[in-house]
Length: 122
Image (tube, rainbow, N blue to C red; front, top):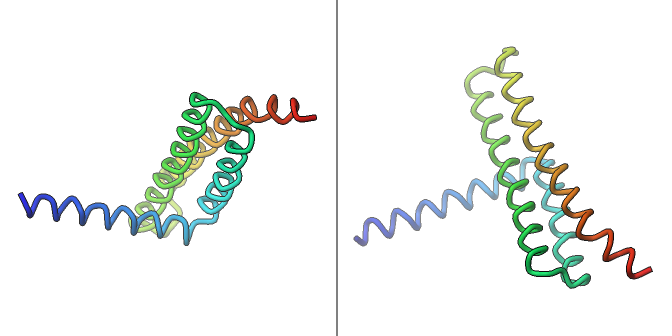
């Protein structure tokens, strides 16, 4: 039982190491983090509802997770071959497209939540 608990603790260590790599070496992840740092205080200031908080958190986590998966795929693809390979290029493009889709959806959710609240302040 102790060994099991220690293994679970170690798995968190590796996960945090991966997040550290993501946010220190990947410019797009830094941009998403910056957007989150802007969104969270703005949500507090505009007193968003519980449901709106849930949607914002879900969007933030989804975009970050997709960015992490995209970065992981890029590392793996680069390990497989540094030479140009059309299929590796397609897989990287599709993964980047998945991040873009999530980011666009998150931006739309953010606009639907924040624009009416900001407009009401005018």
